[in-house]
Length: 392
Ligand code: SF4
Ligand code: ZN
Image (cartoon, rainbow, N blue to C red; front, side, top):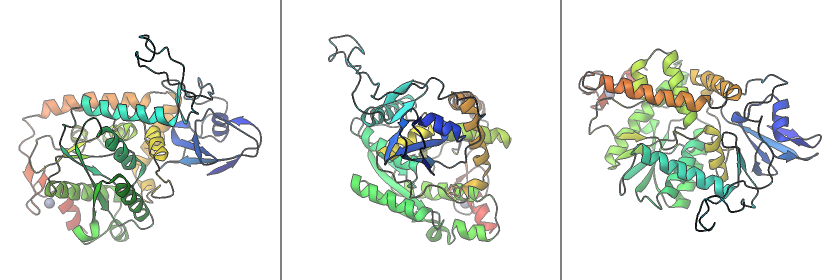
């Protein structure tokens, strides 16, 4: 979406006047990502990138919660924390002179590309450490769709590898969604070649003999459920065959908060406890890790964009709008606008409750079964993927 600037205006106000919440957008001026607090000049053109949801209308007089305290800054506000550079005094060095690319409302910080990307990678590393996700030398398979989340994850893990060495392989699944997945896969493959990361591409057509668009043509609803279940099965089988110890997925903080809400709405406490992982472990189930789970979607998108992700490729799956997740995303963005910090709080509640439910089920949930059709781990006699494929 493009906007002609008719008079000098702070982008936050322009977006606000257009009824667009900060959490939902990235703004580009003349090809550069800028913070919402930047001033746009008369005659300039701003490109506003939405990701995956239509923004709700804000009340016209009230600035969004995120923008209330946002003061424009022409410089990066990052301060060196290195005592060696400051004669022993922490944080006493001058701010970085570079132009900021993002405003982090909760920290009231404007950061340039270098400092934002550095902070992002530090947080990914901290998450990996806090959740004991990885060990040095392990073989990690990244579920790389080519969308912004997995693109950001690829870059961040590649950066983290410099200080925590592990093997990285990309696993890409082509679900067969014409006009959407092709461009994203092309983008993903190009970046793997540039970063010299091995990539394996698998398709629904080859593995199951059908695609998501063909399943849609058969009149099946809830295509995202088919897509998710069938994709997870291929990932698990192929990762195991390739000797991969962990599968890293690009789920961000918003995804975790949305999943928590969805499971409550659907009254599915067991799915809540599992979060796509069985409670009982098995050698046949490759463990999932989510290194972006504590980072907001907007920051993941900004990091991807700053590292060369193209939004023209794979921006929006045509099936996304029909999913309940879409409405939940919409509502959470609205809540976050009015009550900043909502998503973090929902995600933290989810983490605590998930631990309580998992602990209470340990030892009681019975042995993990294996599907009588395909032999994959399952909580029932026939796994969900075989049930879905059988019903086509
Ligand atoms: Fe699959 Fe749904 Fe995601 Fe589209 S939006 S790729 S159908 S899970
Ligand atoms: Zn099965």
